[in-house]
Image (cartoon, rainbow, N blue to C red; front, side):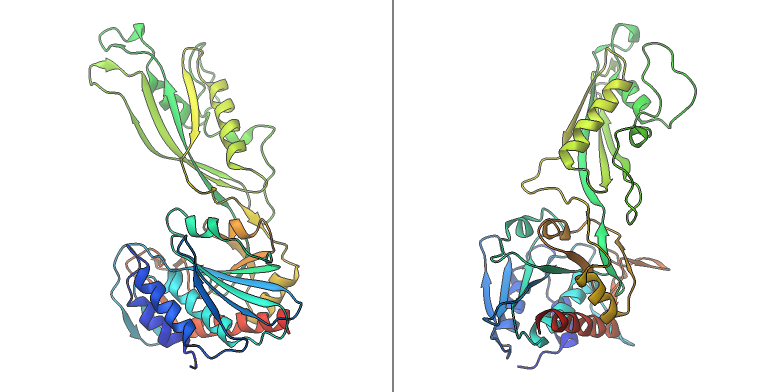
Length: 379
């Protein structure tokens, strides 16, 4: 069967995978099982729901892994094709990249080594699929399909999430001085940094803002810049006439190498405790996950993988704008993120948005670039 990436993409966008990826995975498996490729394609689905396909030359050589995901997110976007543009949920993130990767996987000449296609089921949520992948042999290079406008993304910030719990002591609101107000203390920790000295016993203003000003913070990355720390939600108190004993807020951390999730948690807790009054307790807890957080990664721009894909695609080398499962693979092999489509354009959001689309020409060009890169690595 000859493979048409655009025909596959049209079918894929019209196959729902926002609540259950079963139908989309069946489409992918049936497409691969019907393919005419040399070496032949071996297809399997593991216990974590990953679809893994392998083309093995049987001769010594590099092991290249192509990866992307089949789950999508709301809102619903009706499928349409007009003037070289395919619209619909998942068209950009990440069924367009999937169609390009699939074309390269099936079209590449594999004269030595092997190429593996690993498609995960839950990248948009918990990444249990990617965390369960175990390649034997380990890959020598990994290309992760995401919308990058045909640029080669050799780095990405990580994403950690933590809850900061501030504890005080209850009291009647008519006698506030007899308690310790956790909401007020949390507010002081969250307030904008100020050069105005605080009085004794009060929380230092702007403690969250000054976290990355500490001396032991990781250095900024040349590619990724500085880390960011953003409070996102807050809750506290149980009664409207009571001094609250507890308040908590969630923070979103976009990290740069070499910061780890636990290193971030410990440093933030130490920093906030140092800036809170003695009577106030502060605890920082990472969000509970069954899988590792998506840590930051950076692959050398001048390395063979990034340089080859840059040459075949004609794109720039730059960081990716979002956290990605490439984080897991970059721990064992040079990894880049690449594909057709854009997270956002001049009019606003594209991925995860009501106007999601991908250009047909970009899908076809991305497939050609990946195939040419595979040829350079495997022939």
